[in-house]
Length: 49
Image (cartoon, rainbow, N blue to C red; front, top):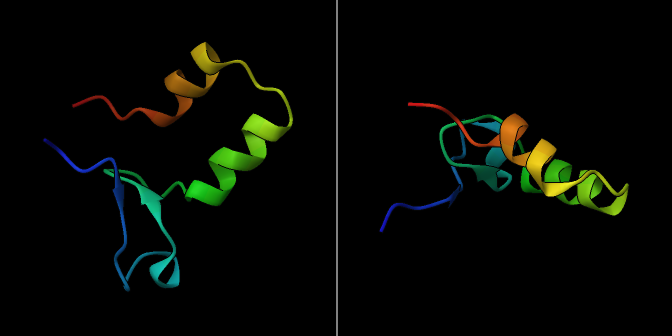
């Protein structure tokens, strides 16, 4: 199974990020807290390969 959250000391000082992006988990959680609907979040966050 592919990792969805990664920690890399060279990206955002080691903060947890969404795999394949530079989007921090904290940023995602802040958007959820603001009430952004999941379909919109998934278009923003899920990288296309």
